[in-house]
Amino acid sequence: MVETSVLPTKGAAYSSPPKTKRLWVEYPAQRKMNTRCLHALLIFCLLGGFAEAARQPQDPQSLSTNAPIERELPGGQTHTYRIALSAGQYALVQVEQRGADVWLTADGPDGKEFASVNLNSSGEGMEQLSIVADAAGEYTLKVIARNPKPAAVGRYAAKIGELRAATEQDRARVKAQSICYEAQKLGLEQKSESKRKALQLYEEALPLWQGLQDPWWESFLLLRLGRVHIDLAEFRQAKDFFSRALIARKELGDRRGEAAAQEGVCQALHYLGDTKGKAECVDALILIFH
Image 1 (cartoon, rainbow, N blue to C red):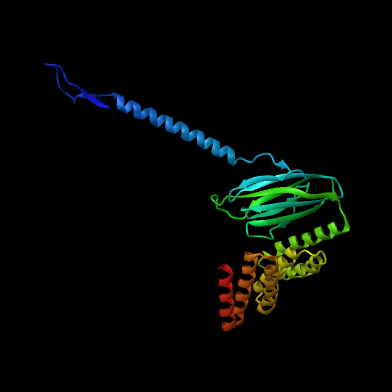
Image 2: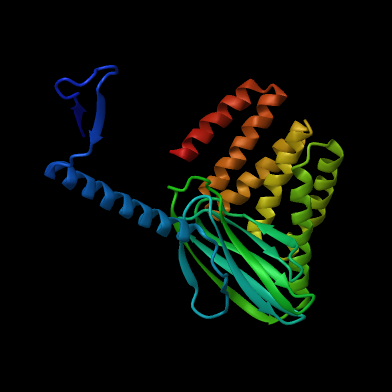
């Protein structure tokens, strides 16, 4: 940019300041810089468009008994799958965690959620969710990353492990799963009445899972019972349930679950005023992490 002044000619009356004309003069180096900036802006816009397209929800894939669908799951994201079932069919959804710590939810053909499962929070191992189709239609599975940070990227593989006509045992499994689903929702409420109801439901479901010989669900309920008793300031009962969960998770080789149970025991001992017991409990907790 340069400025030029238009001066009055000789002999002309001078009654106002000279007018200045602004002329744009683009030098070769400046022209080259402007071209580069334009190219950089175009690339930025294109990449932004691609990233935005990647964030847009895609049509859900169909899940079947064929080869599992393996995908990468960044933190804070959800993958959705369709499962077509006939009335009376049983489907066992299996999601193998390969670095992605996930929880599973399921919606019926009416769009209402009826199940939520997160038994293994280590980012490894299998999460399983059972469906008995009361009505024919398309059911929806959601695989949700528990870690909200986008940089926390893991993988998983999802498939239908079993697909058949539902048996009485399958129906018992779905019944126990449904009871736990309702208990989890009630346990999140602040009212003590809701937490009492959650306790009743967990206690109702516990013998069902024991009868089905499912140690993951059984130990999960023991942990939940301990947690709800803590919320209700019933610390002696909480300690008993956490202690049972500790043994169960240790037998399963689940170090993170073992640590969660041990931490629950320590918390109960703290509220009970057992200083010596709490100190010993904390020492044991440190050993688990090491």
